[in-house]
Length: 353
Image (cartoon, rainbow, N blue to C red; front, side, top):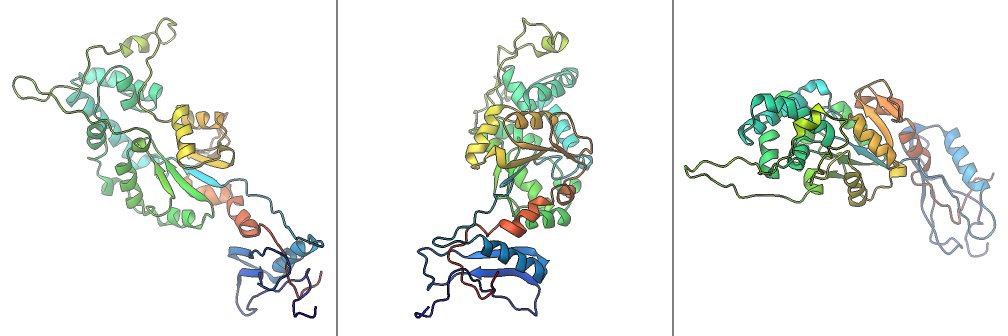
């Protein structure tokens, strides 16, 4: 061309042949004769051979036709990774969950005035039916201050004794070229503390927690005539013990809980909105099969963590969260080949196909 512009249908590789190939700029110049110009990169944390780079450039080039040039690159299968927190980002044998269960037992005895035998009878069944014990307690009629409960149950955990930094997991998460979100039934303070101890506090885009899904419910404590704080109960509690004894009795209808939490649909749907999640393009990691089955029903791709056995209705199983790379190499491969290669408009080249 007489104006000094190179003809369309060519490409310039801006690379240093003496260095490993990490990011190759394929095109962009102000003088190109097409109306819009976009940068296109072959980008990766991996080293690529010159043959691979040449092949990618050739594939881009042969797609080009006269007029506007457009390269449609397939979208990666997943654009978000949604992670549970407890017993997912660290193993169950850490002892955190066992200590939490003990603290809940103590809360029910000290704060709700239950007998120890009653606590043993109710704690796990309430958790099983309602997602969390607190959700179950509120469903059957107990009036609980959210902050007081979370402080009693999580605030007393010996985090530094039970957990330790996990640099291996940190490296895996930081290398993942997909946005990552925490989705937990625990409160935000607990989530932040766990992530801090594990060394993962900067690995996630956001945290969707109990606080996120449930407005703070702080009730002023009442006191009896002797100045003692009254127990957090209401007069009309549902007889959950009767339901446990007769679970198949169709005349017994479980009351709904006011608490929004997994595994219920409203918790997931709120999470989708809050984090702008497309469930069809999201991979969900959790240790609870119940949560995973609910997630699968709503369109999420599911991964059971902490087991090597895949449960019916769950897509994948990981014995450890550390096995993500082995189980899902495409999460990295997709970025290697597609992350910045979205469109090619007016590529100039000195390499002919």
